Image (tube, rainbow, N blue to C red):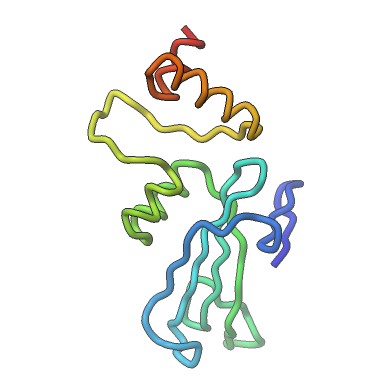
Length: 141
């Protein structure tokens, strides 16, 4: 599905699928829903959802009548993280957002960098014997 929202293109065919969830039942069930989290090449997250006539994805189909439907919803980083926390397993979550630490003094962020830059960061951090995060913190300070 491809949709333009607020002047930005969201396309399930070109974005990276990160994880999906569906409730119990089949498409014959009016309450059936499926949702998939995607990340665009720009690093932006969005959710593609589809569901039956008794779900939040229902679409009007005449007077007092509803049918199945689907929708794309852009998501902020915290919204995507919250959705993943609720609907994905811990391994899938950490593959997307990194290892979870219980030290609340650190905040995970998502930036889009070239592959060459990421490799440089990893190499320099390894040379110094520190993590990539620690290396970036040193650069910023």
